[in-house]
Image 1 (cartoon, rainbow, N blue to C red):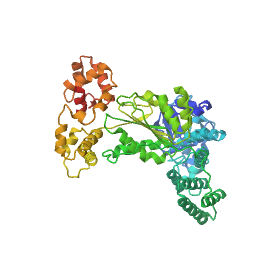
Image 2: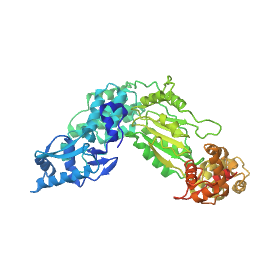
Image 3: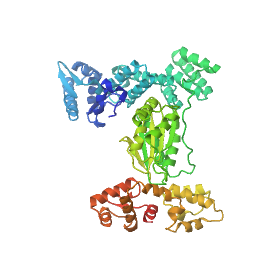
Image 4: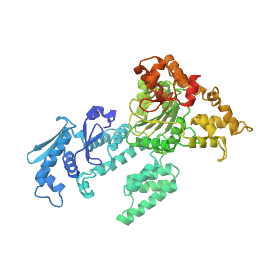
Length: 587
């Protein structure tokens, strides 16, 4: 289960962070324990669970359960069947919860689910709505509404009955959800935060009769320089209301329509502060990475309901930055409050990694904040407060460690962070990892041909093989060829075929040096010895013998090298070198 927003810790919601069992009503009805599904039985079991959870800590009469579950007429054994269903539910829940957490009890002529109501997502949703509406702070309101809306995994009470029955039971939960969406949009607008037009278009298409959604969409289109589209949306919405219900649009929508026609719409309160758009230009020759780009975009897109951290790792020159920048440009429209880029110089030759406090000064300064606190904890808190309720994309390139990254993470949903590093980072256990491997031959050929401006039929296989599938090496080789008009591809291949000089010729020397610099002296010596003496593929026993250390120590050292992508893990007990890394280490 997700840990709730820290701004509500004092409310009692804090306890949810350690709950073992959660009853799910906002989506397919069921139960979860530690984030995993609990098998509570078939549809009727889930139906009874929903009835009891909706009225948690109140007795639900057996006759009412029978009437609701068997609306078309109950069988004679219905009451006995209810007893069996409750017994089955009790057994399923008690396998995952202690008695003081969740109890299903028989009381009088009915049954009750005894638990903290906040274990039921529908009650927790309403609790967050009450707290959001009770605060005068729009930033806190947005964070609370984000938390509330993130609880939804689909239509309320899905999978137990027809839409009509579900609507009757849910007591306006769907209406409350839409109200929360509209309240969130209003609060964001008061904060001067924009919302992606595509997101508003989707909401309006799903709910074309809601005037507040129509108003937000029209205003967003107008502010995006798409006033004709805003007027067309108004025209279609007005025609639909008149045709289906004989109604006109609301007065607020009508006033906005006239204001757009006259060019009189108000600007956001913080319009003077430019929205950061710092993403660098992407590469035109990014080949062979479609699946990885799609995976990164898909993962980061979940930031609407939670903070998402994607950690892209790989060896020097494998194309981590290029991939992440391409994905970030795809993601940009989903993060209208800013797209920030920061090179943390974790593995930059001749330069120390950026200190977290200096990184925070850059991030806060991107939003016009000059008075940054002088200590790391306070500056980090200031940064989290600033982005609370905003939809911001943060690309942190070339990170050195989790200690460098964690203070820079936003605190709540709505933001996405993409990290790149040669080290495998976890971001304090939050990161979804994506490890990049060298390019396959076909993609290597495409990158080289594009960068060198060669015709499709030119044979380049020997050169690209020598480049080891590393985009940095491929582009370096292509640049070398373009700068020597009299050279042929064969001339370049002959130059690169010298093992003593290929790493330097491909401009990889500094990149590999900076990776090895992260090792201590003993590890560097071990790395070089293995590169010179180990076979093409070797195991822990071979490494231990070559290094004259115990197997456990050898295994730990090998795994450290794998984490820095200075060695390749090849199966459970197999290791090998990338050809260029071996040549560099052996030298």
